[in-house]
Image 1: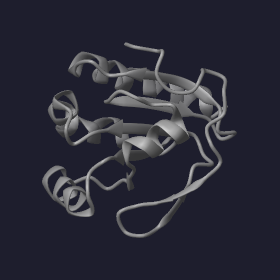
Image 2: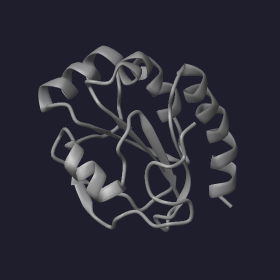
Image 3: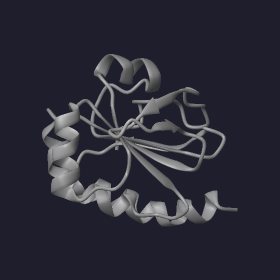
Image 4: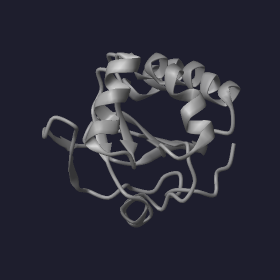
Length: 143
């Protein structure tokens, strides 16, 4: 997993609100997995069917950032039965707000907006490892 992308572990993410596919304001204030994909990225497309597994949590929120259009997001929601917020973000804002240059990428932040874990996902096995790590993270973040 590439760790040189994104903000530093222990660093804070930008305190900013975003709007999801339904126009709802999303403010990242809770323990949250932020997942970043590009609709032009082959690895991102390959892992899309598995994203739902890591998004199902009662203790950790999940937000997907994508450079896709509103129509792209509607299609993904319909196809994969996603129920989490999807935020449209272009590559320029992705790099400016989160220092992220490669996809797919994840950040796990605590309720103080501090980066707890991060990484570039290179294959399905790495995505599965996040899912397994998430169980331990839920326990640590809920203390």
